[in-house]
Amino acid sequence: MTVTAYIGMGANLGDAQATLLAATKEISVLPGVANAKLSPLYRSAPVDAGGPDYINGVLQVSTTMQPETLLRALQAIENGHGRQRPYRHAPRTLDLDLLLFGREVRNTDFLTLPHPRMHERAFVLMPLRDLAPGMMLAQGSLEELLAACPDQLLSRI
Image 1 (tube, rainbow, N blue to C red):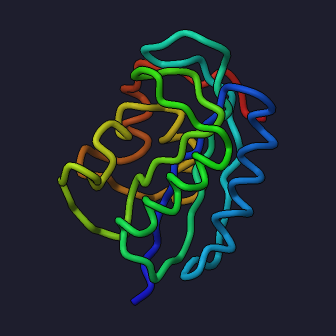
Image 2: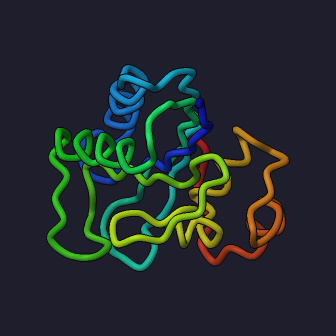
Image 3: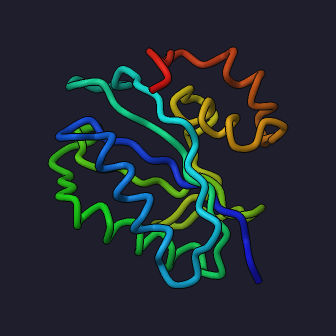
């Protein structure tokens, strides 16, 4: 069965925009992934952290993978781009988060779906709205959630 998944993408170290575009290509050629569509990219200030501004976007894909398999593949791509995890909210060469996987709801030590904080982050909601403007999350419409977000995007790239 094919499922539509949404992947949050971000980076704030190195050439962040080039890294996101390279990761998009790497994800799009994974076995079991098709129809990759990248949202516009946005620049935003770090949330709950210091460091340079982030470049963020959301990638929509169709996949036949299981969600855990997709997440492992995303983590391998992060690692291939030099992702380090020295502390929570550390600056990142690449951050890939599985936001939504069809209508799956999971809460394990490895994977939580939908992503637990996506409804509070403009840097996720804005590009998600670009891809799926009428989408409703459990917490409300993307428009309602964006209006309530404490973080603000700096600019569309």
